[in-house]
Length: 238
Image (tube, rainbow, N blue to C red; front, side, top):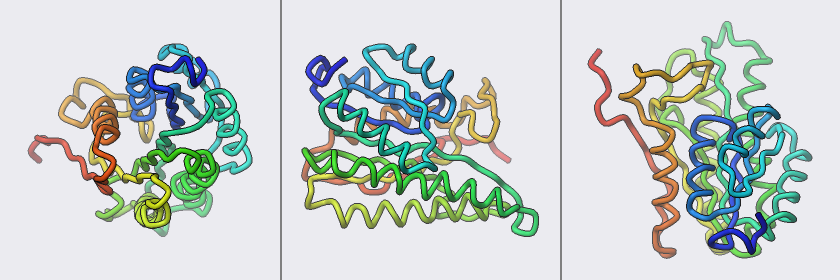
């Protein structure tokens, strides 16, 4: 699919998109007419995800901890589709332990992926987004405002991502680029090695975040919902 072949002439770049929220968002955007690039560290998974979506979706191996690889991936996207309109910053990991037990390597992995990776992704995409305006979504978490025991690295990464997102809004609003931080609670995904099952039916589903993304894209240009908190409507009683 080229830019001219897509239904609306627009394109989207989604990180961490081989499964879960990223995959659901990429699928929804493709269904809405966007030419889509999906990225993941796992080649087989991301290529299979792109084939499953079809409609010319591209699956690209890319580690968001590598700024040069990200720039190459974004440049290839722009070359393939003629520009970039939507950036969904989703790639993330979780390592959970109290500070005494959390290793330096675990801390670095979380910060490098969730926070530095988000910065690298946005930095790589900004020149293309500034060409014709667009939308940046950062997938944060309610953990970005609610600390919990054992969450030092994850909380710090999401608190930082929220701060980065808020500054981006101020930096980019005059370039016709919107920025929204989406902050979900419990989501039925593979995050942290979890395998979704019927027991997760009460949780937010990845498709719900995808629908929210489409709804935000449909907002009038004059209005920016800059921070969206999303919770399960009826969590089980403890």
